[in-house]
Length: 74
Image 1: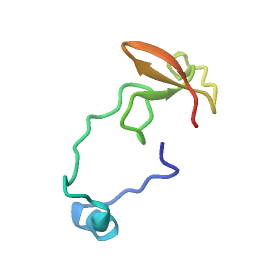
Image 2: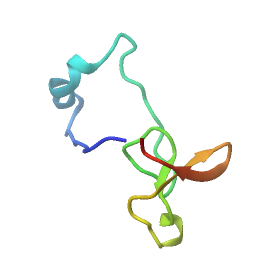
Image 3: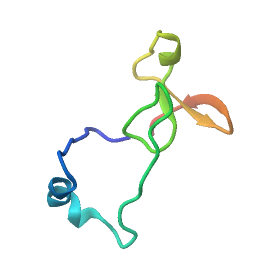
Image 4: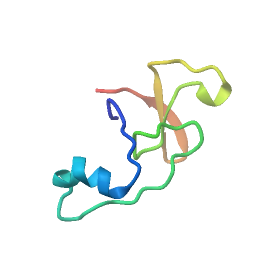
């Protein structure tokens, strides 16, 4: 997961900061995250218990083969 996020009003502004980070494959469009999932990760990861209004901050779970399992940040 990332350590912060940024917002840009337009693509030109984003490219000014990050254009040199784009590889030969270019930009990759990703879908919006699943409900209650992190916005800063391509994989479906969420804070454990967030779906039940009982978030356990610092603990995460990831969707693997249709089942939510504990995710340990290494």
